[in-house]
Length: 139
Image (cartoon, rainbow, N blue to C red):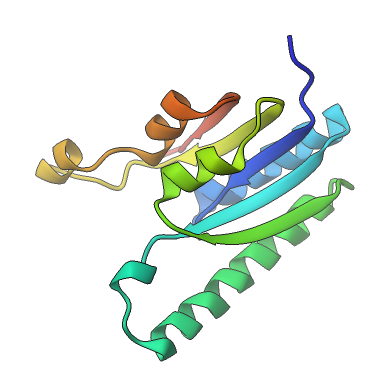
C-alpha cells in the first residue's frame, strides 16, 4: 500500500464540506500529513461582470479562510487554493498518486436534472489517481 503524503479536501460553501474538512484534518493529524483545501469556481465562464466576479471571490475567500481555521485547530499544515474550471476535472488534476481526497457528497439534483447532471464526487472517484473518501450527508 502506498503511503499517504497529503490530504486534498475539495469544498464548497456547505455544512457537508465543513464536515469533510473536520474529518480530513483529523485524519491528517493521525497520518502526520499536510492538507490542501481547494474550491473550484465553475461560474467564471458564465460571468461577464467584474463586480459579480469580485463579490464571488470575496465570498469564496471567506469560506476558505473559515475552513482553514477549522482545520488549523487540529494542528496540521494547511494550504488553500481557488481554482477555475470544471470541478471534477480540476480536483483530479490537483491529485497525485500518494494523496487521499476527502470530499463531501450532497445530492442537490431532483427529477430530470438527476438524470442529466453528473455527481462531482462520482466523477472524482472514477478518475482520480488516488483513493477517495466520500463523506455522506446526514440528511
